[in-house]
Length: 401
Image (cartoon, rainbow, N blue to C red; front, top):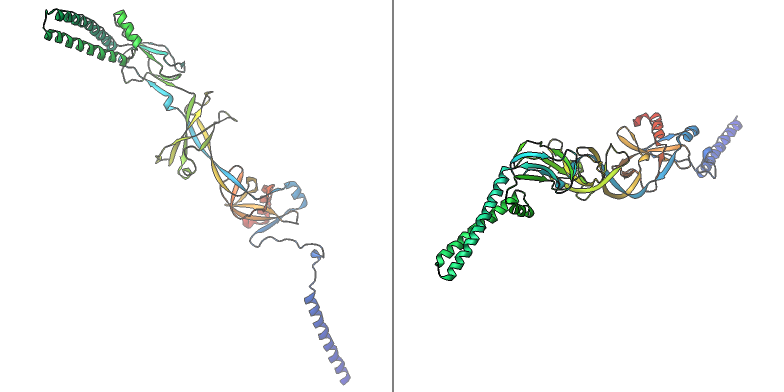
């Protein structure tokens, strides 16, 4: 019995010694997992704050995934706002008569092209007739006063009259000269040229007709008069506009005031002419803000030689402003899930697996998003096939929705 107890004691002791040795050996030589056999790197895992999605070989083939490297680049901001075509008010003239009268003839119609000096209408003016008659009368009186002065000066030299008489004749001559000058200026104000005044003097009779002429080259865009109509000095008869340039008035929101300045380049697009665009730059920004729309008007002058841009047309204006240089990724790499934006990063050494990463981005410009937070230079992001990855991420991780 004592021998049996001794054998059990030695067996237990040897067992404890063997277990201790095995423990030491395992501490010094940990077991190698089957998936990480010698010569093979361990599989990467997604960061703890990100999720991972996996595609089967067939799904990966259908997705046709392509990727790009996040890199530093200069982005330019493109701002698009609505606008409307207006006439160039510096080249649009409202034609009014220079005297009251009755319209005898209108020689142009709405839409006609006119040249500077071309007759638009003829007005019979009693005011002009009176001014011409007065001028002719003053001319005759001056001529008589001049002859009287010459005779007086001859008699003074002969001693037949006193100097006082000669001085009176000289003063009267000066008065008639002043009348002529005033009457001459009045005729010029009524539209007569120097040639017209000279012709009036030669004819010796008044011509009461005023010819209303085009002040600039352009198109008659408004006609407010007909034959037989009585018109006054302040009444607009025609509007003639030079259409070679037009103004584009753009509505700027308050949040965009810092992006657009005088000199900022602009590109104008009209729905009526697909594929065609006009260019210009901001010439003026209204310092006032419309209290109802909270917008300010920016004016862009645009060449319109083909006259395709018509007044009151609606257009879109694209402003391109200088951006910042920084990390940027293609727009196609970004997908929205809920109210957040995400990108997909391929996991290295594991085909078909991707990390879903939330990012903070600036406004898109020129096909790229500037990266504010979430990526670093050199990160690889999926650019093609990201839409399929978005759908798969929503299926595999409903919590992202």
